[in-house]
Image (tube, rainbow over all chains, first blue to last red; front, side, top):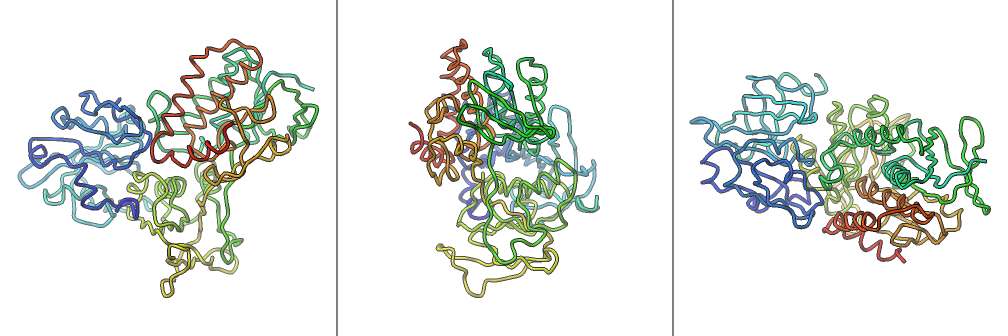
Length: 168
Length: 356
């Protein structure tokens, strides 16, 4: 449970998941922002107006999944690093996960990495497909990782196999 | 003796924002800062800020400090003294400060105290052992001076500071053994908790520290689970091997100057301790003395910036400088909306008690 240990319960997650049908249609955002806090940059970041305008800045974001095309601009604009993009049908067996990443060194394209879930537990291996780190992202890199479809909904972070940050 | 319209004590987010607003309205400003640089705690904030995109949300604290500092350096109506520690405020309206080995004397028409806060300490065995740090000190070592404060850290406190500093430690390649928190809930934003949790750092609510272990310096800590009355649960004690115990257990307003100036003070647990009674323009019970930022009540940097703007512009208006009422109303409106949600509830309660 989020307020107890920082890990959302399945019930808490249910409220922020796009539908399975939408997931299968193509890349889409999942915004794991489940607390009313005063924050609104996601709304301003989205070129598709998929985030509904905030009436009160403390409201939780609401997303129109039909407008979202998974462009990923919002990922590096979320101060809470709570936005991810999922492409369920990336390949036959793999889904694509895009995460915000602020550790050094950055992984490299084609690098194999350990995939972690929301509790920081290892749940498998993934392959880095893209590393985006443009000036506009302001030092929050976006890493795209191909992971087995069955762990796509649980995978939320990576650890480098070549050594953790304290060795790099 | 120096004369000025507004003397500001503290060049953190509140003091910087106030200096710019007051100078824009036409006031001459003297800005005193104890550190050698401007920005206060902003310079240690490497994360993107929450709040409204219309203000500074999305920018990193350090970049907000640079943004303000550049504007202040360009502004001829703001005279800046860094390395200047305010010492006292006297009955004849004279403010003194230690500066460059001398005593600086200033007679301002109005004064803004934006002195911030200091960290709280909690009692446990051996809490004076080297290696027991405040979170602010850890941030200063790491983010200002580039010095690693240890190899493995036990973080005490899961408020925003505890969570954010844990994340910064991990970014610096320092391991965080766990974040322990006495209450049954994470006090900081859940998104901060989640981002540190998915890196593998456990967050242990209902836990506290009993003892720092070590002879010359911290070599470990004894922690325990506690019940809802903060009583240790028997059989749950365990030792963790760490060389840094980092305390992020809250802040209290640094209000000595306001006490000395005779401002009416009131104790508000929601605002972090004794804070001055103030009106809606942030003027204290002593005419011409204003407050903004953590000294007015522990909050966060975005509200400190807005409070600084409000206090700076209000002080200017009091001295007769032309100020648009609309602008003041807009700042008040922005503050109100920032505090409108559930995370602002304790602030609203505290303010209801000290606003006159």
